[in-house]
Length: 307
Ligand code: GDP
Ligand code: ZN
Image 1 (cartoon, rainbow, N blue to C red):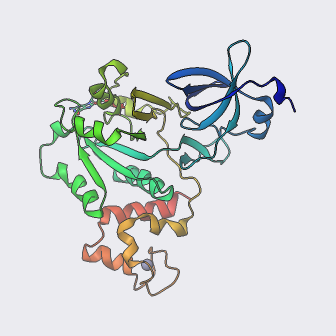
Image 2 (image 1 turned 120 degrees about the vertical axis):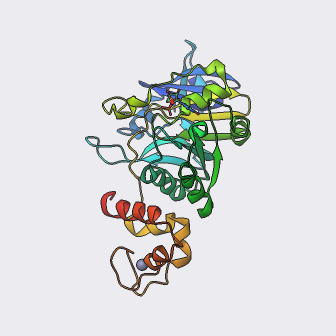
Image 3 (image 1 turned 60 degrees about the horizontal axis):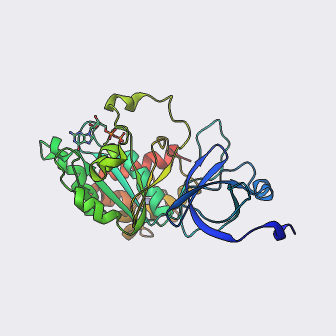
């Protein structure tokens, strides 16, 4: 039905979503597309088409594009939008290969709870995650390196960088090569500066660290897919400040802390929340120093407040 007036179908990837327009990249060109009317209905009340989505689209006579079909996703990084929006899955990036979470060793200092939230979300989505420790040029004391060691001990890859001295910049480029990566992290840690250091032509706006406290702005996630080299796609997510989980139950949380996994099932009570039960193998491991207290604190805070 109606397919007789539809021309050939092209495949492409959504690189930007803005006010009902979907910018689709096909063979290195970007086309301004709209959703086919009947699709709009089936996707109603949701923004379930995200950057990174692969779509089939056709070219209308006036030169505009029409998205006919969104292809199944192989992965997604999602969140639950903050109130007043009602709880639903909000896909930030579709089909990412990996997530790079940037923090700074100083100014602002690392916020482990915030980092752990990203890490848990990636574990839940089964997405490989790499931590980028930026502003290494500001490193002074051994304490500044402690956070790096903490995450390395758990088994996470951490790449030290500095947008100022250039440390780690080429390593970062190699991490990004051949993949679609989400580049995220709190505000003010130097994400734009790192991308500018890699590709000066991007000329991204660099903010002051004080903007970190400006909470009124960017209430929606404005994400876009940068394509600075033929085999590099980077999803830049400047609006992603509040990160609430989507589709994680408190009982699952323990499994998303890799260093807790060896102790699961060894507690006296099953199930055990690892919050207050006696003879809890997880809390015993914390007391012995086998699980870092900072990570346990993140677990406890998430367990109590995030669900
Ligand atoms: P974003 O919010 O994560 O994109 O952070 P920006 O790139 O806007 O940087 C925030 C502030 O940190 C700016 O004042 C930058 O000049 C500064 N900055 C970024 N990277 C570095 C770095 O590696 N070392 C130092 N010392 N400052 C940096
Ligand atoms: Zn326990």
